[in-house]
Image 1 (cartoon, one colour):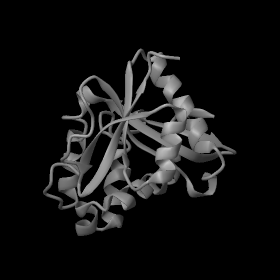
Image 2 (cartoon, helix red, strand yellow):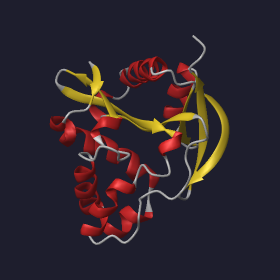
Image 3 (cartoon, one colour):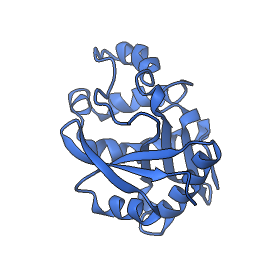
Image 4 (cartoon, one colour):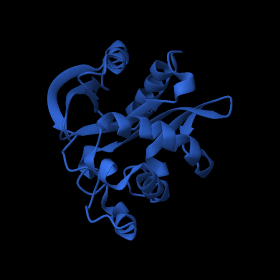
Length: 189
């Protein structure tokens, strides 16, 4: 079942989301440690206008388990999407205003910030099915362009994105990693 995340999903969402953070090798996570960062993001799940707030997370639930997550927002929110977390970060002794400093989305896009499949559901077609369902949700909102960034070295993810119709339109760095910027035209069937 593809649906918005609920409070009771938090313990299943967190490790799936951290698969992405681990791959990104972000300095702030290295400096403060995964446990501190997990505490901060866990608190952030309950902030309405935060990047990883539950209202921005869709999940694919299979047999009562969160099998996949899709997290996103319109590009026009990118400059303010992390502001709600600032007080929580300060409470934990982190002076940085955000985990993210690089611009990730292009003007006019609806940005798929994070997409991951829980380990026990990988290589079973769950990622493709979830992505197709996610595309339909965003299309029904009237959005025109869906975008995402995928590490140039992540061939399995690139394969899934290309298979459903994403096209590489450029490249950018997020942190120290080079990413392909991909778009899906939501106006075509």
